[in-house]
Amino acid sequence: MSYKEKTIWGSCLIAIYILYTFLSGLYVNITNQTLNEDVLSGLFVKVVLMSVFLEILVGIILAIVNAKEADQGSDERDNLFSLKAIRVGYGVLIGAVYIAIFITWKGHQMTDNAIMLPGVDSIYSVLNILVCGFLVAEICKYATQLFYYRRGF
Image 1 (cartoon, rainbow, N blue to C red):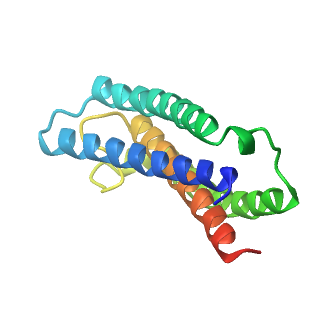
Image 2 (cartoon, rainbow, N blue to C red):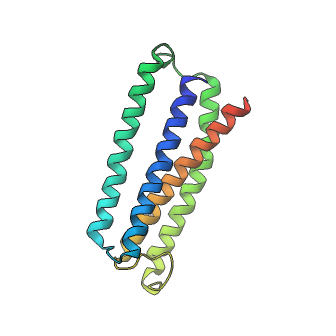
């Protein structure tokens, strides 16, 4: 397995872990009826800090373990796989943005909807959709890249 593929595996697992952590924290606060703007803001900050810290940590560990391969740049195949995967991730992200725009447009009419978070303003529901959409888009992008690496062309 190449260094590039290992970094993609690491990033994919990090994104899955962060999405799981975010959604489980959201679920716990909704079921305990403790969800408010401060708790949700804390979850958003936690997502950002975890993603930065874990990506740096995995990058350092993989660079130390694979020092020779880490110095090599991307080849044409890596770039092609990346471009194909970005197209998939972009499609997922655009879907989340459309949902967020719809919520912004019709949010005041959707108070008892499953998409709207209870106990917070509708802008936090929009931000929730965008954060989840970003994480799902990243997971789809990494999964597509891994698919192409495993397929071989």
